[in-house]
Length: 533
Image (tube, rainbow, N blue to C red):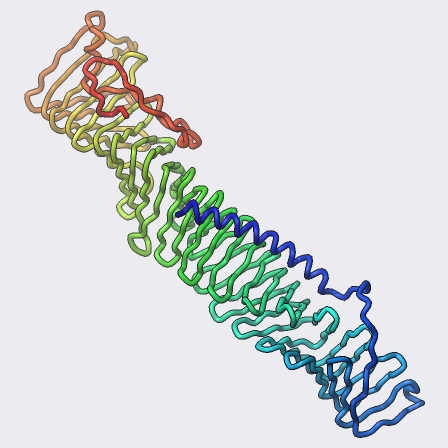
């Protein structure tokens, strides 16, 4: 369904681009053009109460007063008084001016100059053009009858049954119902206000076409765009050119956005970025969805989650990422399939993962592995407990295995039913193992030489580390152990059962989280396939 919707959105965006271009071309034609040569017809005086001539003031004009009416083709012009220049086929009308064209267009004003040859009417002072449910208000309006366009250039306002639009320059075509606005544009609706540099608007469909830098403000949020359209009836929008939606502390950005204000959600197509400036987290992907009412968010296709509240950014990638609100402050981050994350002090992989911002716990499921410096920990399920974005401790449940690399062939190992690794700063400080605790250590002399391998078994085990080296070891109760000199070691003795060294799939940097690396079947003695896909 998402792919179909994405395809339809791409087609719609392309059609919109052509539509915007066509409308822009039409808007050029709206302006007065000398190339238009109208068929010349005469302006007729229908009636007036008095007619006189004033040779001193204007010898070419007929002076008309009282219930004056002119006709030009199908257009009628009324006023209280007028000058009629029959020789030039033009007139000047004063006071209570009214133009009527058919039964759909009425224009009012205090003054009118009409040129019958060009069929252009120049109306001034308290001008009002009425066309059905659409009314245009301005103090200066030129109306071209041939192209059926009225335009103002010193500020004006157009009102229909749903919206009110104002600008410094504007054009309106009664026949096509298209209006063009430029410079200080403002569209006011009872649910939002749109500010723009350039805007087209259809008074029939109530669709506003955005052609310049624009801002849409409402109680639910703010939209920034420079190209797209807004359906003011259905409260939906298609926005292009890296538009973004601001809702509270969250900002949704994409190459293209579909915004349904009525239902409170937005969809982003191409390089989606959802940023929470309060929680210092970002959700990214090639496709994203955000519900501004519930706070739910979804991302897929190169999806990535960033957490940067304490300066050390966590970069997390999965096939699908979800942000699910817990309450107004906290949320759960859920990652599905092929999870890989990187932070300078911690890296990890697993099949699926969940992070709760309320208790700051990272849950890793199905073949989880984490790394810290030269330590590797894996098991059935891993929980990483955070404290102000710093790692407090990691808890591996049911089955646990911790490894520290000593050299290319030697590894310190801890294994048991349950394991907790406690951190101090960025390093592991202590590890506790509970239930069937087993260990292999390669103690180092002061000169860093290795004399043997120490293997132990017990119920419980704790080690303390200092500068990533074994400082103290505690084993209880009834521990057993052996010390085997290095020359006497057989290869299969070096590893506990279920040992794997997965360094080759470890994320090395923030870009490495996108790598797809399959785990290999290894041939070390006594190893199961528990962690091999």
